[in-house]
Structures are given as structure tokens and as C-alpha cells.
Image (cartoon, rainbow, N blue to C red; front, side, top):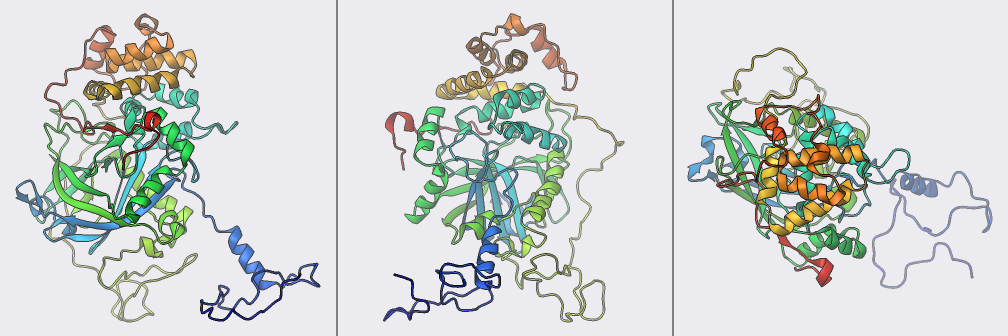
Length: 560
């Protein structure tokens, strides 16, 4: 029995009519135009050609990093204070003042995997927040671990290449490649000690912390500045998996975190986070043994207390995943008045790279897409930028549409009123150079974090380090055990025992020519393996909050 073309709708069928993108009604969506019912097909078959050619282009290039992710939407509300002080003492950003509120979009993601990879893989999680404020968009783009592998953006492509599949075999995250790079980059030790702990496997997007990672500046109305670090603390608590838990979850669902997030929103269990900050005077702080602009370090919370400034609730999932999650675009350079950059080398590099990759991935007019538009701005965008591929919404412009330049007296746009104080921050003096920062100390915080970890976290960290390094060549194993012993005796000894390498096997190794080295490191090297535990008395370390295990391996199910 052949299909009957152009059959009328059934009685009572009042659905909207399917059209092409040109608006032409489609009266047969089952058959191409052919010569006879067996073909051949005709080339002027516009309806089919439009449909199939669009289908061929339905996927934009996936993100080089953070390809796998999910977006949710909600609201942010500021407290208007920091501690018992008004927040305008430190920043003039309107969104953070009393009564400040705005819509938000948050994209959670993994880093190394592709768009269809498992969300239960061990990996840092991206935690990117877009606030649609009255002064324009503010993007706070960070991760769930508080630090990063590097302190200089020039090494970012190398690091990512070491994490990505082998370019010959396409085998995913080959330990010998990962730790070949890490063994020659000791600044990454702190971050690897988090990724290989249960913190590297959050039980859900809802049960993870978020951090801005980079150091930023706040600016008040008088032009006075403070250095600032951002923290998102989940009201749901922190829950993590061991590798066994993650393996069980991955066997049930590759997109386990997206499903958990969207199911929670569907049932009205809206996840919430409190935004907290650490502040520091804006200078280089020579009294510290670490640099405040070093992204491989956290600021001790006993010295720089974390203070709450607002709250975010997510209560809506995307209406269309591609439009609102694949095409959403973030950048560390997207700041509003009162929020500023610091001289953090990673931040400077990210600020170029993030927006540049969006122009390549989505297109030069990516900011015209609804999910990226600054919807909090009264009157919308007004710009003289014009045209480009896939131009969608040029903005209102001035009263004279012929004037797409500035300055003009013919009805174009004018400059905005600027701040009274536009010279900010300390005076910088120096000569052009290519040098690492002076205060590196790549081992102390990695060792302190181990000492502050819970017992089950320590055991899981050692097991994961041991498993990964057991798959590496002997020279890589030895150098990594050497690094780990410099961080903490117990940590290095336990991992070394797991792969058959003792202190005497690595004692002969010298510091890497490329690494920073000072008296503290030299003293530990001279007493390698016998330094005793790191002193963490009185230390409150970022991310060392209570961490509940979501035990899927034994129970088979997760708690709500």
C-alpha cells in the first residue's frame, strides 16, 4: 500500500502546520520528489535539500575543553554586606549592593572528555556562572577544586594535549602521557592531589563546590582596590565518589550528573549555593611564602576568612539543550564595573582564549544569541558593531540608523558616563622578561591538603595515585615519587610502596632545571622521607570541608 500525498488532517487535528525555514507549508514530509515512486530523485527538490543540508550542519565544533556539560538557570540575590560591613566599602558593582539581584545561567562540565563522554569520569568539573546584571553580563568561570594545574597560560595547550587522547592511537588519558607532563611540571602536584582524591569525582553537580580559581580585583567608588577570590558553597552539602562508586554509576548512565540535576529541578528540589569571597590588600605580600596570584595555591582561610555576599538558586533547565547549553559562551574577561582583573598570568591568558574560542566555535556574532545576550540591561545592547556571519540582532543603535560610528553629531551613540576614579591598583615597575614567579613552593600545600583530608579520602587518593603510576615508565614513576615525598612523607611512602619504589630509589634525583627551588625545598630534599608530617595545626584550607561519600559501589543506589 503506497502513501497518499497531501491527505487532509484528521478531524479535530488543530496542531500547527509544519513549514520549511522559508515559511513554506510542508504537505508531504515522508517522501522526496522523484520521477515515479521508485526514483530517481530530482535535484530541484528544495524541501529535501534544505532539510538535509541543515542536518549536515547541526553540530557546531565541540569545545576543545569542557565539551561535556549541562546548563541550568535561576536567580542570584546579593546580601549587600560582607561580614558586618556594607559591601560598597570594597566594590561599587551594582549587582552586589543591597537589593541586587539578577538572572543567572550556570554550566557545569567535565574538562577532558568529548561531548558524549561519561560524566562519571575522574576529571575537574567546570563551574561557569553567567550573571545577567543591569550593567551587562558578568561571567565567573572556574572549577570545583579551587586551584589549577598551571600558573602560566603559555603551558595550557601542552597540558591539555597531555590529557587528551593519544594522537596516534586515540587512547583516552594515557597515564604515561599524563604523568610524563606532570613529572616535569611539579606546580601541578596540588591539583593532581585533588583530582585523584574523591573530590575529583563529585557525586553530582548539585553536591560540589565552585571556585573562581583566578585572583580578581574589587574596586570601590573611590578607586580603592582589593584582591578577591570567589567560592560557591552548596547548601546541599558536598558528596563525592570513590572510583568504585563512579564505575557503578557510569554503568547505569553516561550522563548521570545531567540527569541528576534536571531530575532535581523537575521535582522542585532546586539546588542553591552561597557566594563567598576572600579579600586581601592589593599588593604582592612579600611576607607570604606563596604568591597571591598563583593559581596553584589557595589562600589559608584562617588568615583570609571566607565571607558570604550572596546566594544563587537554580530552578529551570534548558527548553532546548543545543540553544541554551551548547551555544552558551563564557569568558573570564566579561566583568562589570566594580570588578576588575588582577595581574594573574593565567587570568590574562584565559581572558583572550575564552572569547577567542567562542568566536571560532559558535561564530563572530555569538553574543547576539539569546542565551548570551545581556538581558539584564535596560534598553538592551546598543553598539556600532555590524554584520558578520549569521548576524541575528544588531542592537538598537542610535536615533540615526545611518550612523554606525562614534564620535558623531548626526544622531549616533555617545560614550557612557565613566567612574570618577579610573586609575586603579598599585604602580607596577619592571622590565620585560620571561621568568616564573619567585615564590613557587610546589609541595607545601599538596602535603598540607593530604594531612587535612579525611581517612577515607587519603586511602582513595593513595589507591588512585598508585593505580595511575603503576601504568607509567620507571623514570616517570621515580620522579613522581620524588615529588610526592617532598610534599609529604606518608603520602610519598605509601604510593612508593604501592609501585615498588622506596626513598633510596629516588634520593639521587636532583631538582628539575625548570622548577622553582628555595631553602624550604632544599631542606626537605636533604631529609627526604624523614621530614615528619606537615604541621597543619590551626590551618583552615579551602576545599577541606566535610565530604560525604555517596556509596554506590556497595549500596547500588545514591541518596537523594
